[in-house]
Image (cartoon, rainbow, N blue to C red):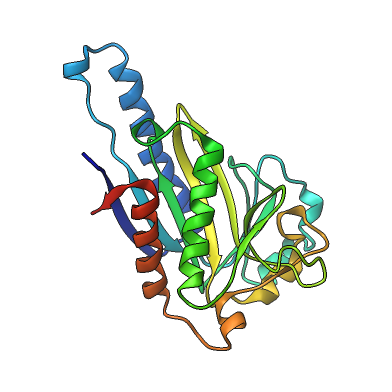
Length: 234
């Protein structure tokens, strides 16, 4: 029987508010797993899985392996740009979130699917690659770098269209991906995105030369997510 994944769209939401929302769900799933360890199999409670979509006001987030020097603006400049800054508990370096970007936070119990973080990240990348292909955008991976890229094999043209950073504990995931759909790319100029100096950032609307329906993008992402993870989106 296929696993069910609950899809939730939080719309435009403050980054910290969304982070707290994730943490609450994440902690609940982890606690259920801890409790199940003391119960007979027939009494164990199934864990739920979620795919959360949202959009954030301008914000920079720094992962555990990141360096603050990759943020190129000070506190006053952040205020002037109407942006906030958080150090967070995902992997990866610094990234930007803002309006026009589709952010996805899958909170999955990988015990329900497969216990392999490397495979999990590759599936998230593939979901984005397949979605972009539906718009005629040919994207792929960059060796040794997480996320989705265009022209990754050409150092002069390589540009990142989707950033990823996840956290997992007891095989429960949180955080996720940020796909630039109609994002204001000027905000990436205030950081060294993901700590990578020599590659640019792009968005779907920049590649296509026109605005893109973000709700449509989410539906396509859901479809490919369901196919890859062999689950039912509810």
